[in-house]
Amino acid sequence: MERCPTCRARLRETQICPRCRTDLRLPLAAEARSALHLRRAVGSLLRGDRDAARTELNQSLHYKREPLALYLQGFSEFLADREAAAERQAAIAAVQEAEAQAKEAEPLLQRWLYGIEKWMGWKEPT
Image: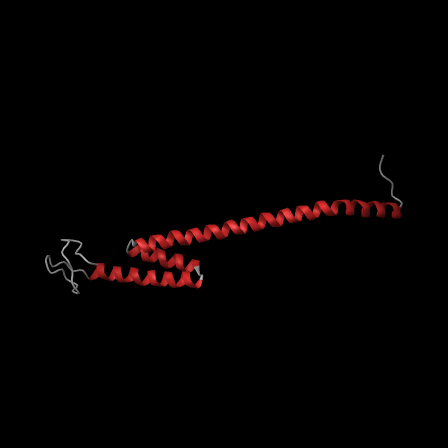
């Protein structure tokens, strides 16, 4: 925190504003807590643990609305959306592959069934 939220005076290393004497311990603690959660979120993102990163980013933003935390939150959501889209595409490709295999196998199945019918002596219903 660079300025006092009450009088906007420049702050030094003290927890009391030199101009208006406002006690800044709680806002400074919230700012430190926000920074701690932000560092943890970055570490989680680097490890690839997006769920933990999302939790830490939400905690960080609860204490302070930092632009970096907002950016990382959007980036994390982008990665999750991209991964979900890739999973949808993989599922669609698997279904299309299964349909192609079924279509390819259909004539074989028909011939096989016809052979069994002939062998068993079954007749086509008329």
